[in-house]
Length: 317
Image (cartoon, rainbow, N blue to C red; front, side, top):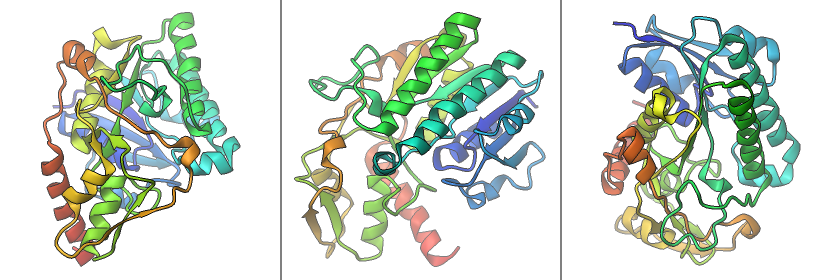
């Protein structure tokens, strides 16, 4: 049974494809939009035969493209499209401002025109990472350490104005470090995917800096479920939610977990130490209390799932 229609920006990206799958599994019709700068048609090839999924190739910075995505009968929009590379934002801050702030403004205007509920997906990188040892909750101070993080909190601030000024139903969603199948395994990917792929290839695992920095690692399906639950919860409107496991692991320990016999682990000079985050641990209690959400997949299970998937990709299956 069809439950409604959802527009998803960034639908062919790593997290986007998992959100699309979660929505399709729940019976929604999904209209995706992606400019394929970070995403790939291959990520959503699984859904290509479904009559409940369409993918439009276009950019959120194009107002006409965004206007065509949303209609009066669209039940919700989940906005994931963004420039997401910290180093690239330091080299080219304008591109991140255009995509993440101007693009979000276009989405907000289209949602206002059609009175469409919006799930705005942000990032944990907006938080001040000092004194975050007990876990970062939603009241934690923000302090963006890169133009990427600055553009993401800027987009949230603009959206908050639409929530208060127009009573537009918006939920603010900040997942922590997400990993899993379909994530890139090069420098633009996440540390779990990079390490796991390098281990399978028999290459050394390179740790930037001393490796004592920690991350709270969230599996892709848990992240997608959080995003969909948050978007459709009436209790969540106007609220900010974090999603993570509540447990962090050092990069040194992560490398030891992933490395198999014979894989070398070595430390290298950090390429952007000024924007490094020393400790990232989520306090997900608000999502648990208001959304009844908690992660299902442990880090060990997630790494096993990712390793199995990467093996099929490396074989060309």
